[in-house]
Each structure stands twice: as C-alpha cells, then as structure tokens.
Image (cartoon, rainbow, N blue to C red):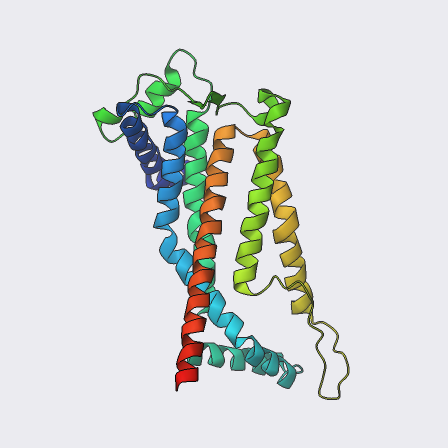
Length: 283
C-alpha cells in the first residue's frame, strides 16, 4: 500500500506541487496581490486544458449517442425479449457508426487522479505550519531550487484560504452556497449536452397506440439525472463547508470553466446545424 501511495505521489502530487509553486513564484515576482489564490486558479485552468481532449471526446460521443437514440429505441422494441440479441445488435450499430460508448467515460476516469492529486497538494499547502516544518517538507519535493519558498501566505483578497467557511464566520456561508449553485449549472449543462436533461418526459407508445411502461434503463437514467442535478451539488456544498476555502476556489473555477466549455460547444453545434440547414436549402 505504501508503494502504491509513493507511485501516486510521484506521478500526480509532486508534479502538481511543482506546477503550483511555478505559478506562485511567477505571480510573486511580478508583485501580484493574492499570489497563492491566483496560483490555484492558474493550475485549475492548466488541469482543465490538459483534460480538454478527453472532454471533447466525451462531448462527441454524447452527441453521436443522442443522434442514435431513435435507432437504439427501435432495437429495444424489436429485441425486447432477447437481451443477448439486443446487445449484439447494439454493438453492431455502434461499430457501424464508429462509436465507442466507453470512450465517453474517459473524461471522468482521467480527471479522478488529477483532481485528487490537486486536492492533496492544496491540502498540503493549507495545513497549519509549525516551526517551518511544512515548508521544509514542500521544498524537499520540488524539482528545482528556484521553486523553493521561505513561507506560505494563504490569503487571497484578505481571505484566508486555509480556513474552512465554518471557521471563517457566518458571512462565508456564501462559499458553499456559491459552490452548490455553480455545480448545479455545470451538471445541468452537461446533462443538456448529453440529451438526458429533458424538461418534459416523452411518453412512449407501442405500435397499437398504447402507452409503454418505462424500462428499467429509463428509470435508472432518470434517477441518475436527478442525483446528478440535485444531490451532487448538495454533497459538494457540504464538502465546501467542511474543507478549506482554497479547495472551494479550485472547484468553483473548475465548474465555471466547464460551463464555459459547454456553452462554446453548444454554440458551435448550433452554428454547424444552421450551416447544414442553409446548405440543404440551397441544394
């Protein structure tokens, strides 16, 4: 177990630590107030940019899956009593359309070690330092001498990022509330792009015009959508209330960046649809 921890530290925590200190030294040298807070913002955007190819792949897969949904529904009707045949036909359809459903999970899987590595790095920075021991531990893990620090100032616009909202006072209850709101809109934007956030439930009918009962898959998707939109933001709000404000700063910047990316993707999608429509009209 210790060996696994050491490998994880070498691959994720130490590089994150060095990049964060790189931002910190640059911002400190130029005299930027709140250098540590801006360093958190800088590394958050850097992590998000690193994961952008995986994000784009997830969005592309989601778009294709949304377009294929009518065909998938037809297969579900046709082979509803033969699960093995249904699975075979679905895999054939995915292969024909050049879709790998598992690739949509890459974004979530890749960000887990990166996010956890950043979390552990920030946790290390935001601990209370006794007699410079923590600073020495940080300096021992740096790749170059110019990254080393003599002390750590965790303030950002007069806010101590090392404190939790619970410790900072009643006014800082706004931090977990803001975190929950941003997470809600991030989840909503993600679900909307994937076509699983429909305001009105579409009633399915069979060939005789009778209403079909929702399948187990439909019920599961509905439950997951509800949890993603409402339960997850509340859970993040609780963590935000209990953990240092610096971690909330990271999470909020991450959420904002996600919302912006989804907005840009949707605008690009709308432009492409408009271009295709104009092209069809001309032809």
